[in-house]
Length: 328
Image 1: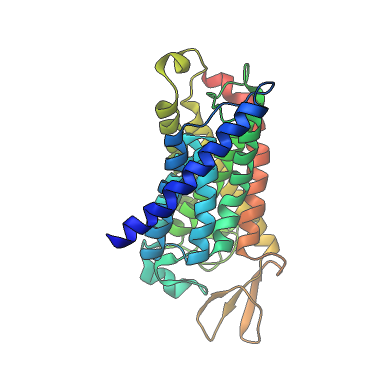
Image 2: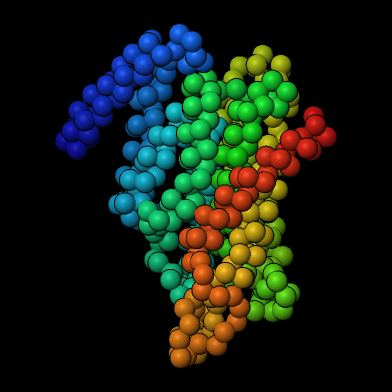
């Protein structure tokens, strides 16, 4: 009880100061620009909800302390920019955390860098959420804190940015679902994406039928989170006067699939994979006891995640622009 009271004594003055600063900024800067005041309730939610999630993540060992701080900052950006962005990010975070613990004992035997409970560091948090958070900050600058439904005809720039946020999150979620489920489900070894030869489980660039399907499912989960945010944000009239929003589920599923395949291709080419006889598992650094399987040691897993997220966020909005009308 004392901790809760002390926390509120810190949070409430902070959010009130931020609200007053934003209100003054909109008063003096918003006369000639598309700036809309942020309600104090939204400021409060933007601080309390990410703070709670960060503290809970440390307590349950989902994130380390620096990872929780990074997630807290990203959560504030997502919540201020769009409820849809925030719920899409939460769909990835919570589903990924649950799947990390799926068949954990088997993963500990397969993965060289496996951590009990799947605790993530700040670097892993940034490489998974950094690109979408930057796009979300761009969305704030473009919209002036005034969200719009996805509509290429009337809000092209905002829709394009919003889909970059969505597809970036769907990419990392799809890759997480593919690796966390595909690596421990099924009896056969995966295929290396570049040669289609069988490789040991845990090899960078290894793909399987189960993992490929799970990447699309993971992306669709993010799309469902985004769609839920749209229903919470916009009135029925606003949604009826806009193009159908439900195709976001299918395109986020495609983004999850594309992101996972890009990740696998980069992993097969730019990450080292070798079989260590001493540890009896696939490792990602060459040594005297390893036999090379694929790739060269240019990027690590975090670097591959960052690049694949960035590429998916760049490519997928163009796919959406081209084919969205087919589903409308």
